[in-house]
Length: 194
Image: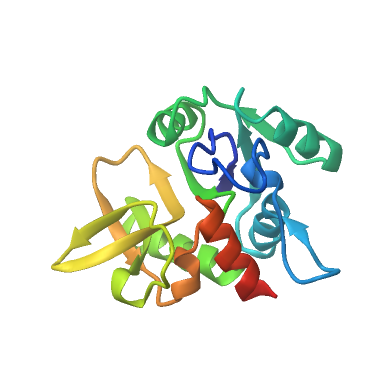
């Protein structure tokens, strides 16, 4: 199975404050003297996982990310950049199943990727990675949903297939729910990493 790192979004919630105009995948994060770009943090975890290969999905919204990825040798696929679900549908036309990973999950680790691949191997349908809302730190949640009476936060890692059915896979790691969607999220993640 391949991983597709989604890095073609508009970053519309990253307005105002420091970093205006900066493409999200290229934001640097980490301790002093050890800062890395969000895209590189995600790529490290993907490379350490059991995926066969990875591709970075870019769009017209992210020309600097495209330029950077070419510079460091990441394989690219261009999407329409019209939205998350639209891009996934577009990618499914080329890749019948894949692990989708948002480029803005600084606390993603290879064990998370391996766990969701194992869940897919058992069920053979789409899997939505999620964290229970009651353990999530005070950050902006991208998407919350209810499953079996529990509120869950989608955490930006999924197995995408053409299956009409999907099940959540619960991670017990509250840090996995931290996606960098706003400047407040970025400030919290930076503080936690320092």
